[in-house]
Image (cartoon, rainbow, N blue to C red; front, top):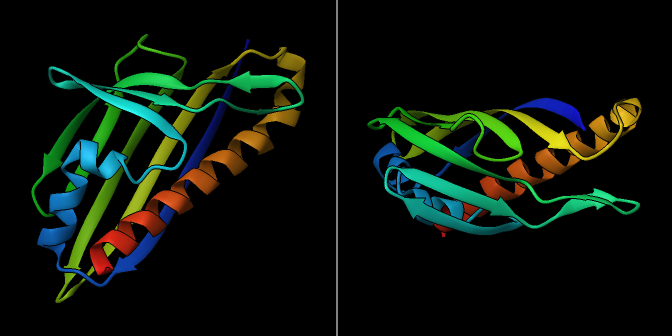
Amino acid sequence: MAKLNTVVKREVKIKAPVEKVFELLSDYERSASHVPDLEKIEKRGEIYHWEFKPVGVKGINVKVQYDVRFSNIPQKEVSWETIPGSGNAEVKGKFELKGEGDETSVTLTMDVTVDAPIPRLMTKLAKPILESEIKNLVEGYLTNIRKTLEG
């Protein structure tokens, strides 16, 4: 097994007031419905269990799953962090919101480490694949959020 890590940071402008953006992002299940390749999200008390469709190449597939706990600063931030040992990934992330009249600047930062079922020697080959998958997931998520809020 090899641990693969990537950090992603993206910023988008959404033509919606910060209150409306925060309302969607802090409704965790509704927000999660915008995440591409998410198979399921399940509320377990104050914890949310996430499971993604398997990803990979050439017969090496990883089904990423983990539990997270969210926290908020109203109208400013929605953040999350995995519960240690709850799955095969560690994810720490946050949305930072800045209201600018009828528009909101949204910055998404995520630090993702996946425990992949590959030999450590393949880490250098697998890392770009993870980075591409995470980048596409983040871009798709932000695009879907923007469409919902601007729609």
